[in-house]
Image 1 (tube, rainbow, N blue to C red):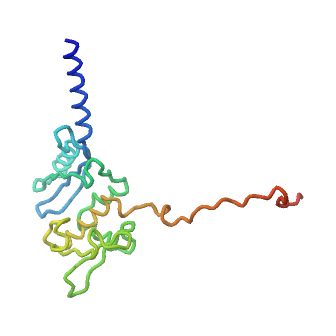
Image 2 (spheres, rainbow, N blue to C red):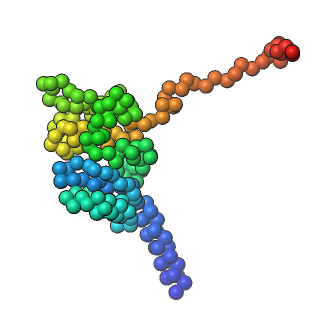
Length: 204
């Protein structure tokens, strides 16, 4: 009997450990009938892989705002179990609608290091997205549906551009620490030579 109880305890421990290992960060988006993101919610998957807490928050917001034509769509964040949870600053932008998010990125200040600009009149790309002065999530930064079909699935380029900006924010590309990139290397203060000490300031 002791052996059976010990075996059961070990199996339960392994089961709990496995459940903890498969827990992943997840996101639920409140999407309207035009497939536009109205608001985003974050959480962690439960033992059966559902983003339960975020889904509950999304459905509550959907009811309280009377958005009966909207739906809550869950998805796993990039990186699986190593996926990152957005900061409060990033959440502010991620909760904006596609239109608002794109307007912020098109403004002079942009969204951190992420920028959007309009293409030329006869350009096949209506928008170009950059993060840290590089095209994102593809090298060209083009919002054309053919170019970004592996990342965003909107038919119009305006929503594709907003989707590309969301990806950049979610993956931490827009608000990287400037301190770590621009700060010059620290130098040690010069040590005084004990044989030739530095002169002391005069006393008044």
